[in-house]
Amino acid sequence: MEEIANPQTYLARMSMPLQEKLKIARFIPKGTRSVLDVGCADGTVTLALAEMYPEVEFVGLDLDERFIAKAQARIGRLRNIRFETGYLRERLSAPERFEVVLFCSVLHEFYSYGEGISTVVKALADAHEILKPGGSLIIRDMILYDYAEQSELWIPEMKEKVLKKMGIPPLLAGFEKYFGVIKTIKGLNHFLLKYLYDDNWEREVKENYVPVSFEKYDQIFRLLGMSVLFQRSSTIPYLKEKWMDDFGFSVAEIESFRSTGIIVAKKSK
Ligand SMILES: C[S@@+](CC[C@H](N)C(=O)[O-])C[C@H]1O[C@@H](n2cnc3c(N)ncnc32)[C@H](O)[C@@H]1O
Image 1 (tube, rainbow, N blue to C red):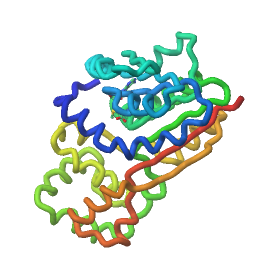
Image 2 (image 1 turned 180 degrees about the horizontal axis):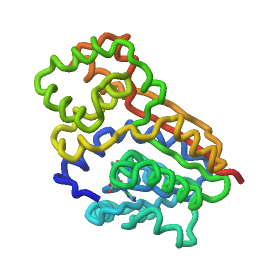
Image 3 (image 1 turned 120 degrees about the vertical axis):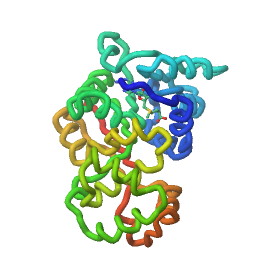
């Protein structure tokens, strides 16, 4: 995996929307005793969840040992949490199984720094294997619908508004070098999610933030025999405001864009 140039900025950015991320807490079913948080980084989300659910045992897993060292140093008085370095795949050989497996803002990284869709399919298949019968898999990530890929409505006008903002043209040119000329709502939505991270631009620009659509996740879960219990696409209010402030989008235009997807799928009993 490519080195993160500035781990401190990366972690600060990850933990910023913590309250937003913690909305996944309500998808942890009542009576759950064990949760595996895959790609937990410095444990910000895992620790907050462990505090909210003292009766649940949490395991945070990340392949970056520097992040895991930070996470371990933050455990303090919590007794229901541990952190481990490693790949999800490596856990298959351990007998431990979980009632919930969580992927919070990680699967797009699996895609970009792994082998694309096959890495995501493998990760979900591994999670399926690591779940107890009847267990829940929770995904929170930037997820868009495939139909946004077909939609070209209003694109020239909206792209013009984006290009008017100072500092944007070189970022957009860099983005289009990797992802092609923006011609659809999905393309513009992808750029809107990305331009905010110009501090780590060299790394960020290449990362596909929205590689797996809701429709593709549906296909994967069908293949695994899992039932999708919940699916939601939304936009964090802060981002809506930021996009309107930065580019002068109207309320109607802003409705085209999304920032966050949540999917909950259940393994059969
Ligand atoms: C964007 S951060 C998300 C952190 C945290 N889940 C959150 O929402 O704040 C993604 C993390 O996934 C980790 N990661 C990427 N691929 C992984 C893999 N195959 N196994 C375990 N961790 C992985 C990275 O090291 C990084 O810390």
